[in-house]
Image 1 (cartoon, rainbow, N blue to C red):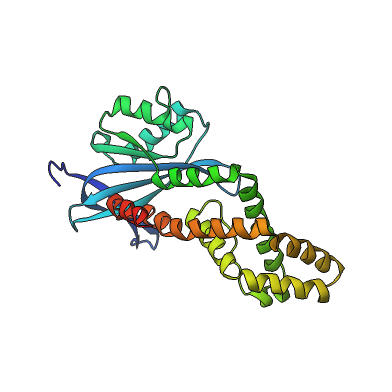
Image 2: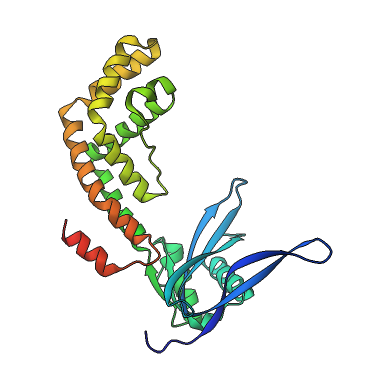
Length: 274
């Protein structure tokens, strides 16, 4: 790596006890290279909108790529101007030299990625070296979500979710098929894993539904029969096999794209070798 300009970034805090018995936090600084800022909006349990900020950088002390979560900062409004000002003021307050920021990483919504008035544009006007990069994992997830526009795929995924919920709600039902993994919309690799595992236990699931249709209470028998009829239909079976096939291939890709030491060459080679 050539032309690296050094700066100091706080990457962790250590709690210490002072003479009076109180707890203090001391910031530990490492010498690192230029950084990439990663940010996303979220809402806490109280309903407060907040921004999560992370930094990705090359640590000159250990010669490794690091990615550290910095913290949350509240957002008063969700317009591009306020968000960009919040990012700049928060990072500046935390001691970052933003002239050495070389990349911004967000999702692709217009507020963040807009070429005219988006957050990335506003920040890039002040810090020209901070180029915007649409999150690779988010882009992959958008492509996969486009498949949900197909009625067969949309219905099959809905049925899988329904089947998983049906078995997870009861320990007696769960004992028949084991622990079916619940889908998580926010964790894309987990969603792929959930589909793959449901497909692996497909025969066990169908057999369990047949048993519950005969031995369960009235509500269980009715729901089990509905799921049994849907899961054994040719359309669902073919669609599930297709979804499970690409989920098994995309699961490792999603994991690679979320890793700290992401290597796009490795990702490309993996995809081409599918």
